[in-house]
Length: 91
Image (cartoon, rainbow, N blue to C red; front, side, top):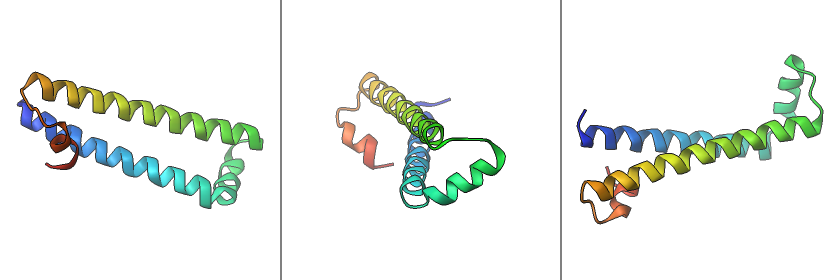
């Protein structure tokens, strides 16, 4: 597996994870009653438990993104890329 292939995979994975995170946050902010109604049909959740599960999930997702970004930046330094912003923006 070449470095360029790994770099592209991590870029697309980061982009997809950011889209999921933003969508999850927007759904939680703007469609909370709908989400609560759907999930309480399957599980018996209080409001506090519902919020705790969602915010913990968002925190875990953000931690995974931070780890992925750290791996990408560390490998970019190792392979001699001096401009880390090109890794974040360009493909």
